[in-house]
Length: 219
Length: 233
Image 1 (cartoon, each protein chain N blue to C red):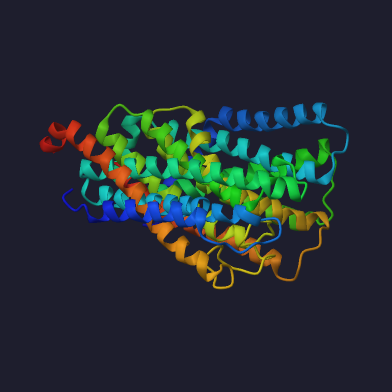
Image 2 (tube, each protein chain N blue to C red):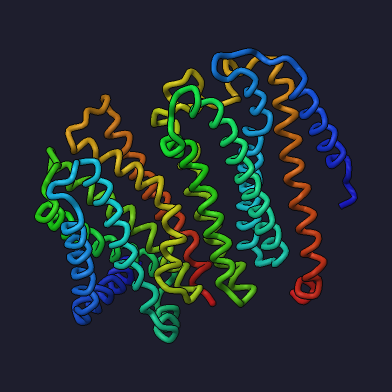
């Protein structure tokens, strides 16, 4: 099982390395979005504005990053995967791959935010940790949404419609959590509580994905 | 279909709710005053919504276990009546807000909408909106039933923490937040006067039964319309 997951993961990474235009496409998407923000915002936005802008951008970056993961697989290739791997292995490989991809994109957009929109974060290391946690949560949810939307033969718009209400609670938790990196004082243990809850929701998403994906997979 | 006792019960309970709800004496509280009677309507809508969505969730699981088209009809109609209850819950809540929070506490409607409880409710309505959009994007009946059942299960599971856990962690004006005395709005012993409870519990049962009744009527109509399809299965 593990080596098949690994093989599927390796295949996705190789595809990404060989078809670099999609990868650079997303990078460019991030860069241009943040540049638009830089031009339209005052020079150093207030920390609350900065925070909410950052997370909204993360959301859209994730929709664009993860959207193609199932849409790019054509029918013939899916049939091939169907014959060589089980749905559970397939979805786990996809989840891992999308998490890795999204974490990279999150870090890139964080760096660009720091460059263009100043750095109101007082505890940068903690904020990086929160961003990584957030990137994981968002990409997990959107991987499953992308699998659903791919079945409906719809574009990225459907992914957004399906995913936004589902990700909202986690996004609110993350926005609140990241305020702890903006030198807002929390009561003892609240930060761990919020982070733990986000982690638990991630776990819930993974379990649901593993249970539900087999039903999406067969046609 | 032949069991009609619960329909009669629902009717009687609702007549009782409306008469007793408007005529019986209620505690006179600061700010709330007579609006406290909205409890018999507003809170019941959310109870009804959660029960209907839960039923829809149950039938979606059942659909995935046997791929019986009937269960898909059940799941969809319970979800649509649940959404109706959600919208009614919002409407009754808005009336309540407009005479308590907005006027007496000087809140703007924009800030009221950011209440954690209201966010949870908005998420619920958005999720089921997305569910119907998803359903609309398929032409194949079996595929539609299968994929939307998957989304329904996933979304309901994610809805649960956003309604039951997160509002309890953050401060809010709404009853049930950590700032207030009670954990569960309207269910806590200290929350409600015993005379109000005598109306509230029947009201919850009555409204929920009414929701189930509406849903079963819709389901029967559709089962009848798709008789041939189901028979072919």
